Image (cartoon, rainbow, N blue to C red; front, side):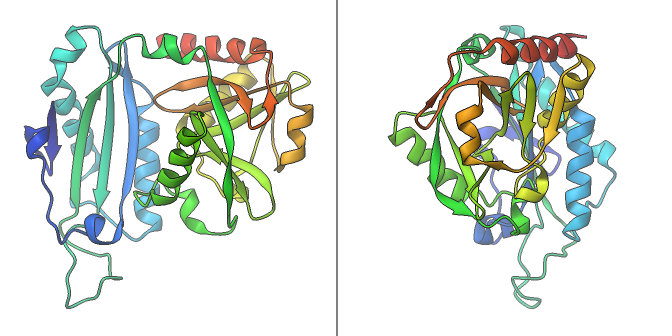
Length: 286
């Protein structure tokens, strides 16, 4: 695999960054993860737009236009085209940190003239989408997140909490852990957004509940509206699971994956989930 580090293309095993980088020392950085579908990028502009917005909100900037970053992504895909030629799609990730810490300024001063930018490409397993159609099992994370903490709304590299929750899920034989916020409401998974199905309507928590507004989440809302489904963004107390008929999770790599259970709640049906999933995949194909 070939990676891109600040515009230079090297074997992934040689994609090094400084040990004085903000990302290494303090976990400060942003990232975007997306993929190719049948060898072509999908919704890439949406990811760039979110990255640009998050950089602005954090007072960070790039020393070049976003078009340059987009060119680096395309060149990374070309450098790894041997996987595409085998029929495998690529999972891509852009990671941006402020760069090297200046000890004269302080570790809290993020403005630098040379950010660190790394682009990775990883081949997806064969039959990736077909296997995901079978569904995930999820559990409720045993810890609650403060809903007003601003970090959840950014695609930030500070992922330690999600790592711990995902490890807990795996130890319980599950694929994903769903976070509760400080009000006891369902919010999102460790790497996914959550949707519930009740009476032929989709329910998902609003960003104000303390979660990331995923690119795929916004696409699913748009597509559901196009096919005549109502989508409500509202607080989701855990008790709502008793009335929930189906559930699924989304992100830019998996698309939509049905949930067969959340904790003790089993979901016997995937009918509406599969309808939305089929509409999404049709949209992607077009």
